[in-house]
Every structure is written in C-alpha cells, then in structure tokens.
Image (cartoon, rainbow, N blue to C red):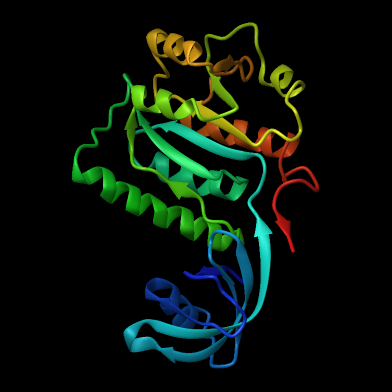
Amino acid sequence: MPIFFVQGKMNPGDVMEISGEDAHHIARVLRMEKGDLVSLSNGVDALGTGQILELIPKDRKIKVKVIEKNKFEPRRPRITLFQGVPKGQKFDLILQKNTELGVSEFVPVITERTVVEIKGESKSKKAERWQKITKEAAKQCRRPDLPVVREPVDFDECLELLKNYRMVLVPWEGERGIFLKSILANVPPDVPDIAVLIGPEGGFSVEEIEKARKSGAVTVSLGPRILRTETAGFVVTAVLMYELGDLGGDRGSHYA
C-alpha cells in the first residue's frame, strides 16, 4: 500500500485529514472503507498507521485517526541533485526515478546550454508541479521522507548554493584523470551531504566547468560512454546510495 502524506506531528489519537487526489485514490481506486488502516507520513520525521474514521467522497476528504507513530531520522548522506533543466518531459522522469533512489532535494539549474525558458511566475508554478511528481513517486515506493523541489536557479546562483555542501561532484565528459570510483574510495562513511551537478543536453560549457572547479567542485568521469542527461543522474545517485546510503545495506534512514 502506498504512503499517504499528511501535515502535523501525527501523535497517536490525532485526527488527520487526507484530501484531493489522495482521498479519491483511497475511496474510489483502493475502495477502502471506514475502519480500514492506511500508512501515513508527515514527510519529515514521522511514519505511522491511521484508521479511517469517515469518508466524504463528494468533498474528496477522508478523516483518519492516528493509532501508531514511529520516528525516523532523515537518510544519510543527504544527496541534492542540481540538474540542468532538459527539454520536454525528461525532468519528470528524473524527479520520479531519483526520488525512488533516495535523493533528498532537487534544484533545477538554468545553464548556458539550457534550451528551456523559465521566467517569472512560471518558476513557482513549475516547482509546484514538480513537487507533486516527487510526492507521487515517494508514495508509490513507500518512502516516508518527502524530497524538496526548489525553484529554478541560474548557474551563478547554483554555485552559491553549492558552497553549503561538504562534497560536490560534477560528472563531465571532458574529465580524463578522476573517476567516480576513485573519489568514493576516499569518502568518509559519515559524510553528511553530497551535491551532484548534472548538465543539460549538450553538457556544461568549459567556462561553467572552470567556475565550478574554482568553487570547490570535483569533476569526475563516469567511464568511456557519454550518458544522456537523464541517465547520468540515475547512475551517480545509485552508486552513491549503494556505497554510502541505504541502497546497499544497513545505512540510511533509521526508524524508531
């Protein structure tokens, strides 16, 4: 069963409301009834079980009583994907699959070679739509913590944000001497956060690479083949979560 996200502390006995598409899914698709149990999360630090008290299909609302609550600690390392915005619907796929893999935050980046134009109010509207995509992906893979999707930033703004990370990796086809495998061999197992910067179609310009290096980023090679922008993020995230996170064993989120 998917996890349904609610707002609040989720203390046992609290009555929470599930509304909109989630309520429709519970009532019309899953055909659940009063008394049935659902999995709940506040998307931040609490995971639990709720019992349906009332279904109001016409208002797309469901009232649920929390009967069990467990705390969970956010997964480590915290991976933020700074993704050059690609054309078409590719970013939707990037959000979906990297949410499944465990990315904690997404920052869309407008680079020199980005073709898509995002201006003004469309930034917030796109971020809202993208957040819905990550929420649906988290529900389906039963991920209790909800990834954050930021509004698009330009490359210089991106570099400022990258200063907050202990490690910044930039896969780049022009890198010949440093490989992702060799970098990970020397990463402390308790590293708290890692930023991954992926270019759009056409990659980064040489000037952007130099700026990133000067800001402390490490360019790495992913091997002899040139990967598509949507593939590169999957590869790096999967490797990081296998080596340092919860994809390869007992690290990552802790439930109590």
